[in-house]
Image (cartoon, rainbow, N blue to C red; front, side, top):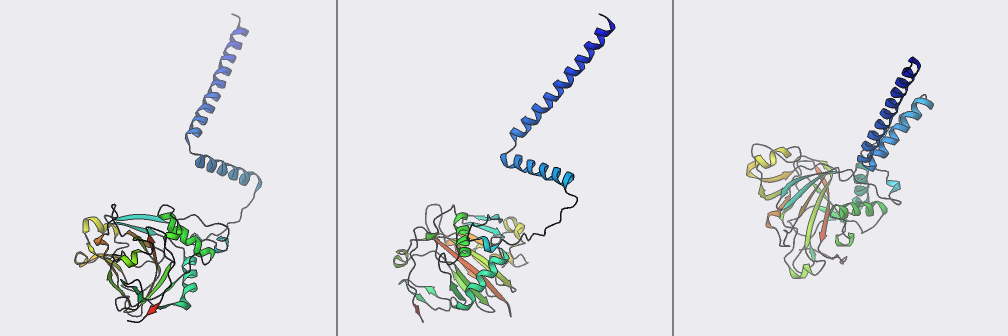
Length: 311
């Protein structure tokens, strides 16, 4: 073989190896991309395109400040926003879930402004199916008409979607409740045992208590029959009251605006759960706590005519 042919041979060989290396690199890249999720791939493409445009065509891109704590309420009439909340399981039996950032600051302000002019002395539902003023519940409250506004409707849907996207009509109207210093709701169950009450939507299977304002000391939500246990509950001290006397009490949730406590009032067999015995403790001096009650029934809840009767 001549010198010319030898050089040509090695050049072709190196060229072939280079081409093979390119194809191998492309194959591996495609394999990596195919294993990524569609969302990851689209995010990668957007990132690459943005970087390319920025580096080649944009000398300076102004920074746009974004408030991550709020949604644009004006858009609720077109589309409800996707949630940004996180959850923690506090108890498994009964199931108690703590939801952080369930409502945004502007949603909270909207609900307070919507209901504040209509707050009046809270009532309790008696065994005869009527509502009475009772010293066991000394707060003030106001109901929000179902689907009253697009913002209310989106908030209702968020509660429904958290429970597996149930029909909103299984829920009672949202109820804003205000506790000032010394005002409280004494220990009680949210479930019912009276046949007359169960005619209206059946059993209350779940409850939410969502904190709207936490301008107070104390004012905790206590589950009296679920005793504080250091090994189980100490890791939740950012949301539970943890002090030297904690083991003498049930678990006590701190009022933290925007967060919600969710629990099942019945067990997996549909039987009422006596461990859900709970109370809304009064705020300290000059304090105010505002919350949002959300109750869900096993059947659709027809809206009753509420009659106030003093006892």
